[in-house]
Amino acid sequence: MFEWDESYSVKVHLLDSQHKRLFAVLQELQDAMIAGHGKQAAGRLLERLIDYTVNHFATEKALLEKCKFPGLAAQRSQHHDLTQPVLALKKEFDTGVGNVTPQLMSFLQDWLKNHIKKMDQGYSDFLNAHGVR
Ligand SMILES: [Fe+2]
Ligand SMILES: [Fe+2]
Image 1 (tube, helix red, strand yellow):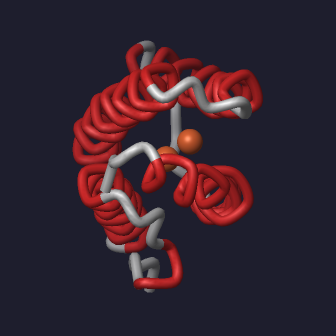
Image 2 (spheres, rainbow, N blue to C red):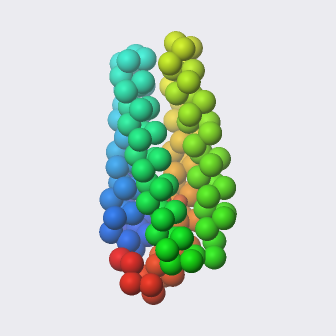
């Protein structure tokens, strides 16, 4: 199971709820892969993943910019590192050659877990101190 729990909290309500949606869509993608639900389901979930991800990164960036968080550049570069392979994968799906593999799932899940714990949690106190909760 791939589930959000309190240990992933970044102490900002909106960002936590966006992270929860990312966990949920990755879990759905994994379930679809295991159940062999094929490319159509995976393609739709991938679209949702991109949608949620783009949305979340934009929200995070706007908040960090507004509060002048010093680690913004590092955040943006890690976000870019995830966005690129996911968009490339979507392109593969659109041309019919893409596939959701266990390797891909562990890449996405590891990325999300590590990014939240090593990067996102680094802005919690800073944002809270600027009145963002
Ligand atoms: Fe982030
Ligand atoms: Fe995040």
